[in-house]
Amino acid sequence: MRAGLTFLVLGYVLSQFYRAFLAVLAPVLKAEIGATPADLALSSGIWFLVFALMQMPVGAALDRIGPRLTVSVLLALGGAGGALVFALAQGPGALHLAMALIGVGCSPVLMASYYIFARVYSPAIFGTLAGAIVGAGSLGNILGAAPLAALVGAVGWRPTLLGLAVVTLIVAAALFLTVRDPERVEVPDTGHGSVLDLLRIPGLWAILPLMAVAYAPAAAIRGLWAGPYLSDVYAADAAAIGRATLVMALAMVAGNFAYGPLDRLLGTRKWGVFAGNTLSALCLAALALAPAPGFWASAALLAALGFFGASFPAIMAHGRSFFPPHLVGRGVTFLNMFGIGGAGVLQFASGRVHKAFAGVDTTTPFVALFIFFLVPLLIGLALYLFSRD
Image 1 (tube, one colour):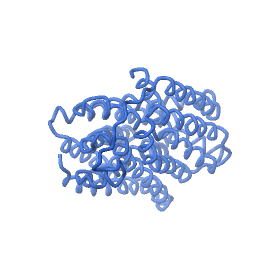
Image 2: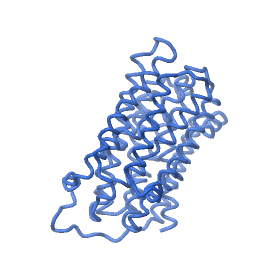
Image 3: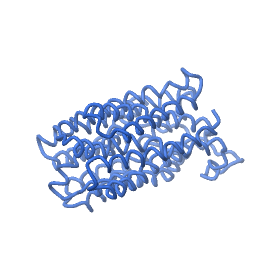
């Protein structure tokens, strides 16, 4: 299983890269094919929404046919195919199609890993393993910052995307050859292994709202709005944006590793998640109250947001603790659907928020965006207080 998990991590590196690389490409895409920030917000939102809509069929496939075929086929057809469409794009419409295909391709990668963790390893270390693979896979966030900016500057964005299509296809082939499916679990007479069985689990209801909003601020700002924010407010060039987003990406990696073992260290899943997301909310509030404190002060707040906003594996571990074995595949993908779907919906809407305040001055559109991401997070935190540890 080691080789399979290694390539699953590489697949997740690609998934993280694809969800975050638009921020760095924003200036060149606007100059060459006329893609505005609103267009890129739509493309990014499409990635998240398609990814989310795929989660239930992916969950059923994991439970019924296993992770090997599920992840290798979808990554090859969707991931590599979408990167190819992106490389050939002549306008924003092609970008939307490319990001939809890439969303399909990336949709099973992390959940295949979580499925294997939940089926093969002890439940007590699920959070640690979940955080470790997200942390390691977040190398894609790093590669999608300064390294991507340097590569695009050297060879251009179209050859870069063609190369990514080839790499994605190679990783998909390696997954087909190395991933091993865990033994099947029989569905008990008391349930049919459906989504309705998940909805009958009362412990999930207070977790789902926070799952839907906790990941969105860091994901949207790192993957989409950090570039326009630093460019418009500080007139930062691509290199400066690459450095700042690299710092934020590194903070997100560190946050995933920090959240992973937190439940075992503190003896609680709930309160570590609550404290971290409260600090994430404070970062958003600080950016909204002082949107132009200086380039590196802003970069530091963005990095702190990335660190404290990396609670995805910890919330996943909290929810996974309620799943019986025969519902693990559907359960983790159900949670992931809320996490990624919430990020997608908020990214869609964030483009309209930015557009509504564009032209007022350089900071007002971003103040509106920070508040836009802050309010749902506060609501999710309030409802999470009712969750059972």
